[in-house]
Image (tube, rainbow, N blue to C red; front, side):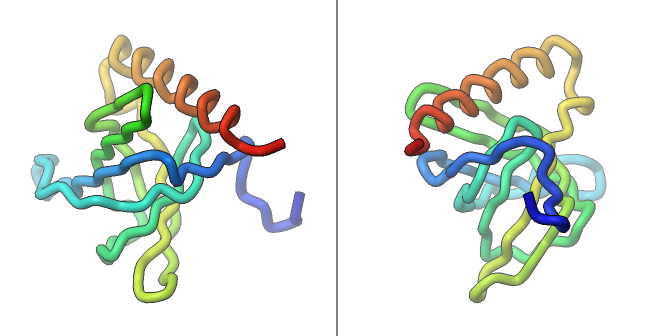
Length: 124
């Protein structure tokens, strides 16, 4: 592991995932949905590429879909933003604490299943 490594968990290639992001307005209501490219995934967050310029700390709702699983309106926060070849690379942290307890547990279970399916698709 590199000295400047920020990851606490193994990340997996997330290119098979379909990802939609929705920014929240000042009142916490979701704005128009935008597609984004999922780059890598871990149980605590996801790295995405988007043409939208957003600031660190911005709250989002994300929807993630794989061949077997689908999660809608998962709260996330941008924790890092970098310009990348005309687009922006964002590190998002899932904010499960913003969901009711039962919804949070259910979403966490699906995130675990997504992680397992991405892990099994990763060549050894």
